[in-house]
Amino acid sequence: MKGKFIAFEGCEGAGKSTQMRLLSEWLTLRGIPHILTREPGGGAISEAIRKIILDGKNSEMTDECEALLYAAARVQHLADTVQPALARGETVLCDRYIFSSFAYQGYGRGLSLDFLKAINAYAIENYMPDVTLFLDIPSSRAFARKHGADPNDRMEQAGEAFHKRVYDGYKALLAAYPDRMFAIDCAGTKFETSARIVEFLQSRGYFG
Ligand code: TYD
Image (cartoon, rainbow, N blue to C red; front, side):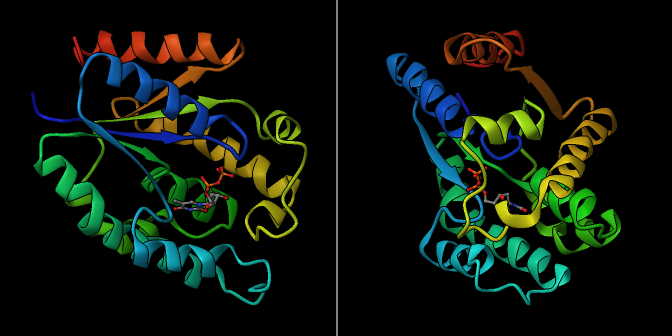
């Protein structure tokens, strides 16, 4: 069976990495080959770009530069990690992808979605995920879960109002891309959320 490209989205602390790990365990039990990767990062060059983007010392970075660096990291990540895995027939579980750029740089920073689509055209045209799962927890609750923002992380330091715009942005994206992006209710335990994710993927005929 051809591998699926599955992206996870959500606010900081929404539980993406926990849910990716639980889904990975479920896939492993069923012998389904897959990789876990993340953006920005997922390869040596992209991880180096990640350090520049998130470095709390880079407070002078313009919003446009930030958006371009995320797009650059993405192109390299596709070449280094995503494309080879899909070519091997493996499923790719990716922590954040293009909708993070729309939510954070678009709705959060206020850049136009047209600019973001233009600089991400390569990814949009060639590598749109089969499905994007949005772990639905308001930013305020998600931050409380992770005990506040990391002082060394430039994005986490962007402030409450910024992260509220990001969450509202995700909601707008869900409405704009109803056949690509799906909300997963995260109100229960991590195991209940994980069961919902599996149920949703199977309802689409994946990993039957
Ligand atoms: P991540 O490591 O997933 O943060 P966390 O696990 O704490 O949610 O992502 C790093 C940060 O980069 C996060 O603040 C979201 C941001 N980001 C963007 O602003 N645009 C993007 O395109 C991507 C991929 C991430």
